[in-house]
Image (tube, rainbow, N blue to C red):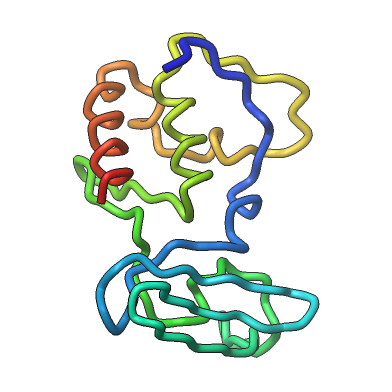
Length: 147
């Protein structure tokens, strides 16, 4: 694990087009993808072959529209990379998101540069930033990677 981390200024939306979820049929890892231009979201399980396609029309706060939501939000499914941690929830949308969090949490030196907006890392709960949580969070991430 590297001891230096440079914030890439990613927002959570950077990781939301492909989301790992629990397959509603076989309970193994499946993938949801969304294409906002085509207004379609799909769920595919490579284990059992389950496949579902939906349009991106959703109701949110009383409004119905084609929202650019995380791919998993178009289906009633659980996230694959999801676990309780202390009084909070730890989650990642996909493996790239999980690895990004792992690099940040594992780094002793965290560099932020030229922010033009609030990044994903800046919006994380305080517990992600605290040195006392580094080892327990890294163990949790390792467990999720092996799931």
